[in-house]
Image (cartoon, rainbow, N blue to C red; front, side, top):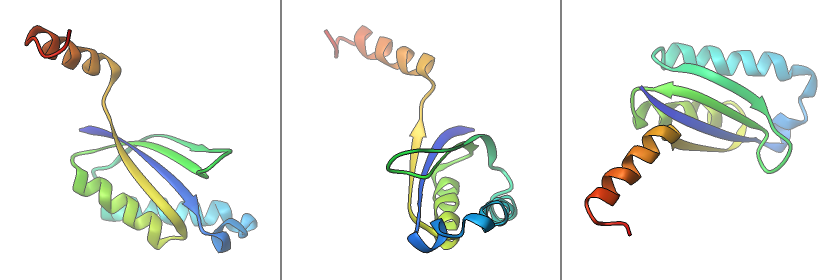
Length: 105
C-alpha cells in the first residue's frame, strides 16, 4: 500500500455549516469506505491556514487516491489536493542508491 496525503479546503457554503460538520464528515467517510473499501485512514487533522483538513491514508494506487479526492469535491470541498508520501527511511535509501550510481556528488 502507498501512503497519500489529502489536503482539503471547504467551499464557503460548506464551511458555514458548522453545526452539521460532524454529520457531513461522517457522510464523506461513509462514501469513501463504500467506494474505496481498500483505503485505510492513518490520521485526520483540522488545520489552521490555507487548507481546512489534512488526511493521511493508505491506498493501493493513484487511481484510488484520485477517487478519494473526487469524493471530497463532490461533498463540499472547494479544493482537494492529493500527494503521495514516501517514508523518510525509503527516501534515504533512494538517495543512497542514486549516490552509489554516481549521479549525486
